[in-house]
Length: 138
Image (cartoon, rainbow, N blue to C red; front, side):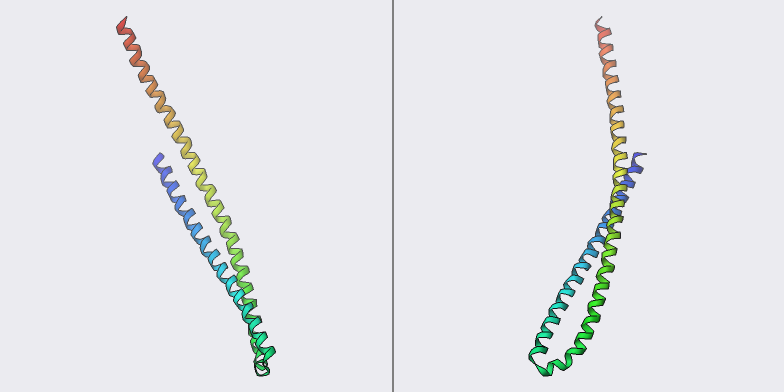
């Protein structure tokens, strides 16, 4: 019976590890998107400076600005989507952790009961040996 619980614990540890990996991947993606947004802002600032200093470059800035606004909007949507996925993954990971702990506590309880029974049997055997030794001496 105990081996079944050990198997469940191992299964839930694996599931928890999978959830952790998925969460780590989502957080890496969120960091990448944040970096992309930072680079885009730096690009926009650099293009604005170039457009300010060069009249020829100023003609093309309008198209760049339109594309940058659209790209910024897509990045913001992606970041929001990934953040909601991170929240879901965090919740799933917490649930998986709670379930794993539930099984581990059940196994710990079983182990303690088994140890108490084993100790009781050992004490009974030692009591029997001591009683038979006492009876022999009398």
